[in-house]
Image 1 (spheres, one colour):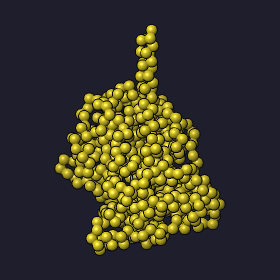
Image 2 (cartoon, rainbow, N blue to C red):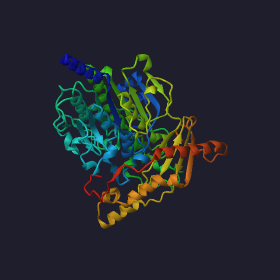
Image 3 (cartoon, rainbow, N blue to C red):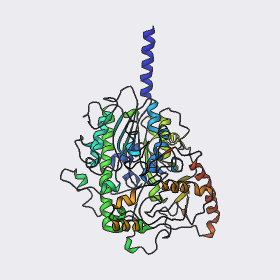
Image 4 (cartoon, rainbow, N blue to C red):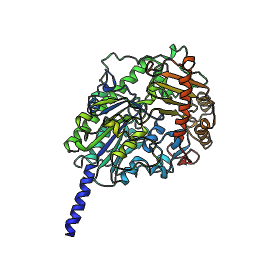
Length: 547
């Protein structure tokens, strides 16, 4: 009798594990909303992603919280606004061990999920950030590099050396197969706590591309052994310039006042956007990268089907932020415009009936909602530290909006000229406010470095202890009464490209004043309460910290 009870108990545990969905979360890098067929791009070939959107839900009004890699990715991991988690390239901090314990991978692993992380990591975790080893050892399966990967990851990270492929999407695809299928080739570089994925556990796999980011597309060489996708695809087409594109030489009035946005100090990596030729070449590479990513999505879905895992595996697809490609004369990110904050978000939950799937939703959702939704799907209580919303009801097609306003911000205001700014928006109106830009010029720093013969990268990218205080002031000053020096107001329904600033129009004064009040509520909510759970992480504290 006792033996029978034990068998029944173990059988119940196995059944419960199978009932909990597997989850695969795919995150791309610098992917603007319009880089897929399902979002209106008539050139790019993304049939597998389009099919996923047609069989699931495509959120057409999804936004990130901070339009730059590190803070955005940490916001996704911790389900927190940057103003709460307090980690950016210029913050002089890393995510503390305590905060990391409440990240979605850790929460789900403790709840019994078999977890994997593949591709790029751009979040400094633990004492020493990228060199702490904390993140590498927090997963059941780890096959990733800290920082950028390049299009040929073996050139930058030795962990990938055992892969057969040489190009990024294909190397990541090998790792996906290794994680999911025990019969696939075992990658020697992967850090594994078990030889293979347990069949009696649900899994949570995070796939993180460093594409179509310029750090990877700029390194594409059309090598002899590269797939034809990356050599010839799209190169026989007449690729158009982005809508509202303005070449640098043709800019008559800058989008933002020069005192706020110091474009002459912009990072050189965005100079391609200054000319039509450079923009079209980079755009062509982005299209090629998207087709490579799309092929991985198709292979993933086929692998799940072959292993009879497809009926119980939720797939989520999104990006960490968008990118300007010369539209209105702008290049890069770290702004609060739609081009940088509006991202794709697709959720395919095969457990739902077909009549509940295959639609678009214009509900206002954000990247911080992804973790909250995944833990809800897994039947896990949402951690109190999460600021995101569970959007499960929206995924099921229920008309239950989770927020009236979206809040975004940019706290990466440095010698590279970008302004501090914050934004609130609903489905019709967007309000952006900017603060005084007192940052010293990167152009002058480069000249000084060359004058004395020091490496320019050390001058530009080292973060020192006093910058911790500057960043803290960026967070707290607006809440303590700092006034904006410039404001913008856009009617998103009539002007989705944000061409016409209506902040100075007297007939919009009531709308502007209301959004100022909304801003105060939303920034207060984004800040949260208490001290940030961060560790000191500067070139002073960790000279060899892999910053």
